[in-house]
Image 1 (tube, rainbow, N blue to C red):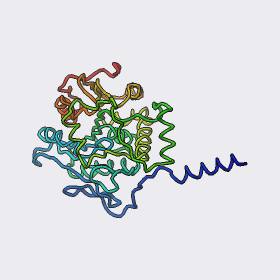
Image 2: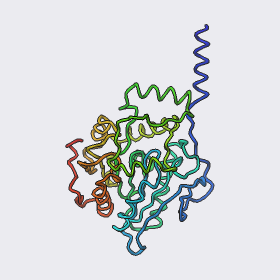
Image 3: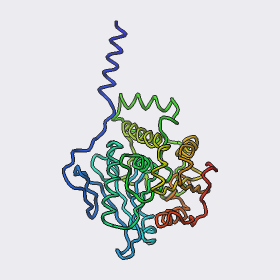
Image 4: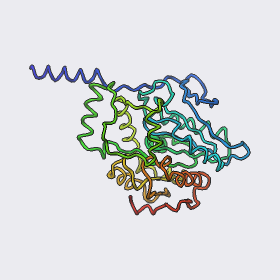
Length: 330
């Protein structure tokens, strides 16, 4: 009897500290684009950076989604090159990141997917008859995958996945899954910092990495329940990959990976390549000198040019010559 009471008490304690999700509010307005923000239907403000050539020179648009703990500044330099190529670039802070409200909290993958779907619609309305490409880096790539697999799918014309984060529970060892489950239910508010001495190299651009370390808008201490939310998003992206064939038939998709990828485990990258529908017309580039942060590495210029080329003509050969056959693997 005593053990049963202890078990019941333990269960109640876990339930009392479940992972927090900052859910969006009800729809109260028509979404719109402002000079420095996207306003969603619930009134939520997504800080926005727009870099565009003159209206007469715009050949297409690019909607850019940053990675976990990052924000729209992740595309500040790339946007200049993309704009010079004729692309109007729309990069926004996703909910809970950068200068958005509720920074550091997890707002749910449904909200992130809906925000992307709404943004693409708004950008299409602003640039009628021009192709709109979505690019997602890391976590942003997971959002793009989830949006492609949503019902209805996002209405983009092309999609670029730059080192998409699909490190979900299916490829995560138990000694990572179980601590996350436990701490997300006991101390979901606990903030974590990357352990010192962690031998992971996200990029060879050390100057850029040091700048991120000083950037007040980059999240340096992550709530446990935000990590829990990220893993849920990656689960959704990973699980939906095999069903994307019909969508990729309509939305040309380019996968970008670095041969020196050091953030996503090798087994995760292998699983990603194995799960993508082999009979669908997705394309794949593997950069010999590339790390996880491909568009900010020291050799990022070749990746940036490839993205611009694909956004303007998804059937053209990539300028870098780094495209691989899908069967080659990683």
